[in-house]
Length: 395
Image (cartoon, rainbow, N blue to C red):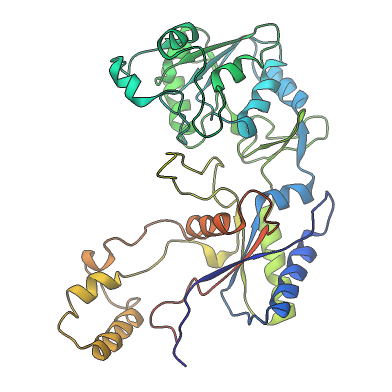
């Protein structure tokens, strides 16, 4: 029978997860209940995605912000500069509050005109009118206010992030500067906490080469347990979120063991080899708000082996407009299917791949799952994706 539907993604309802819950059992039973209720047939290489917050909640991977202060005091001797954090109430504000509780002087350097995920600190047209050179100019908080005003609100959140971050100081121990060269911080202190996410390795290298004496990243804060509380050995504070006014939820750990066990359990119950992944933020950019969604260190902190690598695809439009352009519709359809079936054993031209997406499968699937589940009140933290590995030649 001719296939009429390609990839589908369905949000799966799940109970509210608490620390200590058997997440493997909950995920498997939630999926099986949904497919039974909706009369869905499972197939090999279907994909189950589980949002990272569900995993972290079940693990109880939380820590009080006093642990942040304690870890900072263990690793730094004197005043510290904090370099290029994300502008976020959910992602960084509580971390900064914990940093301030250390009692150290904090020189907070914000990249401008936006952070690394696209949250803006100023109007770009006004920035151009003022003739500011973003590569070389360093703005103090006072200069920033003089140029852009006493209240500079984010267009979507309505938050003045410079004011919000300044207000987190303990005994006025936070000074804020806007700069894009991390080495500017070395004029104030040689001890640096690198807070950006995706460029952290380059930033650390630049600072060490320029003479910094102590350099850690957020991925190295709470990378081991403090006082028996939560931690992440791979990412530390990266990927964390605000849980309460005094505690954070960390990015989940040990995800590979989890996804492999869910895959094993699904095989036992259905006879199908289902791929499984844990997903966080999707890797996509909002063209209107200019915000790049990916604030987590990776899209997927754990996935089964079948989800490794990048897609092997050819561009149907290119082939239809070139190689097969003179064929009739039925002939073109059959020729296209034959070409797809042969793609693993034949060499394609550059044009045949032109426009296909050279991204990791987990980044693509994680983005699909993130958009499907949303981050609000949909109540579908599990996503079932079917047909993702099918193509035009699949019957």
